[in-house]
Length: 304
Image (cartoon, rainbow, N blue to C red; front, top):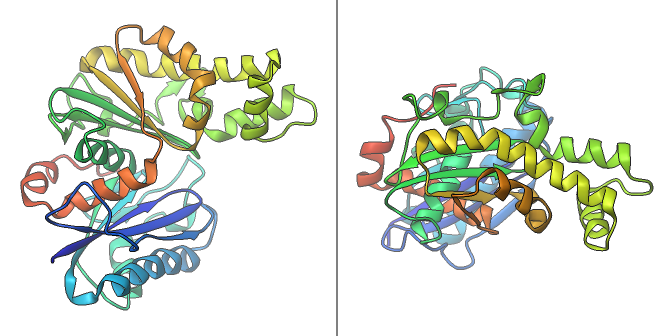
């Protein structure tokens, strides 16, 4: 049975699993592998962690069965050429200007063709693959964690240009409140507000627990986060005429706290949360080796 290894690269992890070509909506049982890493690791450490996770999966399912590797990668990145341009968003600075496709391939014990998809795009495409997001119509995918990821899908295919989407489909770098959007909806924004305004609480999880327990100051932080996110999304959701906003990422564990404020900014849009962001991104990345999808999507890959 031909298989693809799907890979999700996040700020603090790399996760990989095999996907059978005839079952694109599910991970192959017992193929999943996860490795912790940090976004400020050096080049060698990052590449070794990523390649190592991929090799583990290939060996679990058998090298002869694996035909390709699809990687969900955060930006800025040249997804066609496989070159990193990480700068300005606190991720993978050591890989700026690096040919990541070549570096990963050279580090693998079992080299295979490598293709890339933006991580938020992979998440949204994966949600379509499992039926969590509609295959037709317009969908905005948003991932919330170390940074802000975004994707605009039209009929299940990425949209990266035109008047109705931001350049490259990216929201993170757009001007907002004297800085950029990423500064106001990333985990570091939440952490900074929590440490500034709450006593004895310094993590998103403990602040969320406090808010659910009736701490008004903690609740106000999450409401402010939801308002920021809604303010950033609203003009683009309207322009794109999106029926659905699909949310993923670690911060979505607090959706019950920031969702109401977000919904006030997007009153006519369906907002859905898919908790298993990682699996969705892995499945979406593997779609890069689906010929029908790739023939259309490869012409809509950001170059930065």
